[in-house]
Image 1 (cartoon, rainbow, N blue to C red):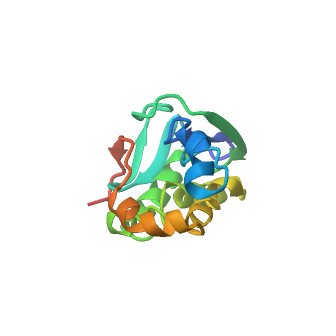
Image 2: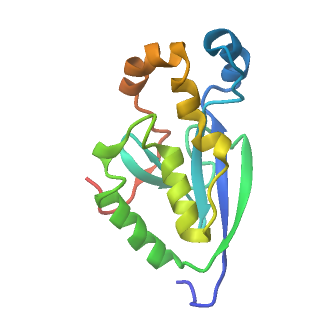
Image 3: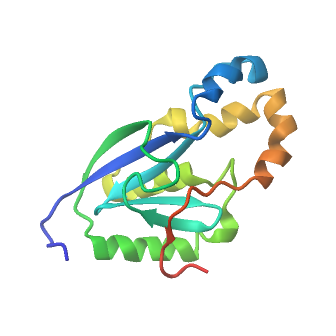
Length: 165
């Protein structure tokens, strides 16, 4: 149990789902350079929290099938204790981030990480991550692939947060 006056570190784990392929292929396929296809998770209270096609999940830091993150951003600290944070996540799991709300382009792991980061620290995650879907969809190739990509739900593995279906 956390004490009321405690401060907890908050980190953003960033993974490139393409494993470097976006950097190599995006100029040819999209006509612009992308450095990666980003998946993010927020690490706080000793766990990594993320959102995917099966809802809100958690695991040990770097415990997803994606392995170690490509980079880590220190988002600062929070005074939100673990119990309050878990209540917040359970509320999100029943509303804003329920399983049926996942959308690869508009409501995904990165929108979740951004909302959680703001709740915990008042800070947003880097815009190069949150702007990526619109950047891809603004290309002819992105528009042509949208139906296929939306049918491919991404879930890197973990344990669902209590209160989810």
